[in-house]
Image (cartoon, rainbow over all chains, first blue to last red; front, side):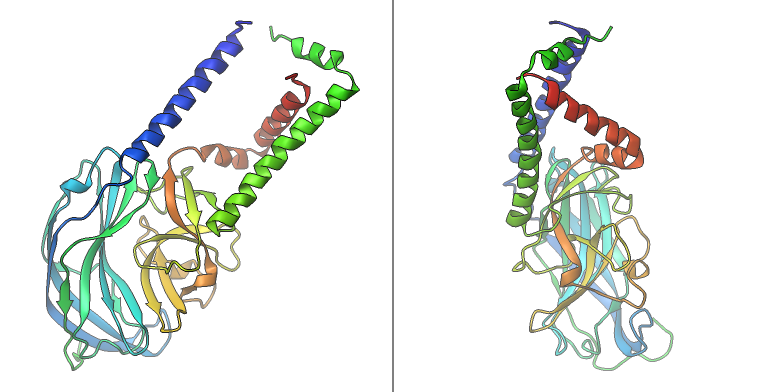
Length: 180
Length: 179
């Protein structure tokens, strides 16, 4: 009856089911949490060029560039089931070509234990702001939003946007030359 | 020493009991299949549970983590979410994040992905000449996450002999073990 193997079996089965139950409780206890937070974004040095995006085709597309300031306190987003935040700054706008355009311009990973108050000044974009065509010229309603994808220790992967966005206006003439 | 009592179990079985055991085994296999197919119907995804096979999404997902996917048509693809997609010429689906979305009035959408741990976007991974992914390339979007559990399947795929040994062992156990 009480062989070594049966004891190992009983102990491992019990510890596995306990672990599973605890993991589920961890997920359930954080499922309904609201992950909103206020964000302040401003942009400056906005320039626009019209150059070929060779990764897609030879046609010329609009390429925007800007610097931005960003500040937010993300400490409240961390709880016992938050492993990591994936922050991303999205430009969202409408063009004659496309009803919805979303371009991620910058992102950052904040791991549990890292500094979770963000205060960036005059930050460069991390990714190119290419439009799908020539829709950015003179566009005055491009909204910049900071969003986050919460990576749990176990559970769902919710995506939330910060309250507070910045409305970006592009010049109505292309910048010539190399300068940025 | 290992106890070999279970062989006595087998010896004492009559033909009825043997049938019962075989049917029991078939029941387990078919209910596993039913659960998998049922999940496919409920989630709308051809592969509702996937194991992360690469480190390209670290530190969010590591090798061996388990992801639950859904793939409902009415849910649009949006920047920032994690999708699982297939690329022509590659057998293994890729789990990466959507970085760019362009959606037309009629709902046709093209998007670009990138792994959190990669320095460049995925255009180098796509099929030759492909610059964007479309809705039909998506296997599912990541909805739930459980760490580590999938490492079992990775070990089994890395060591096929181990897989066959485990499967044979479990099969034999179920067949000859008396209820």
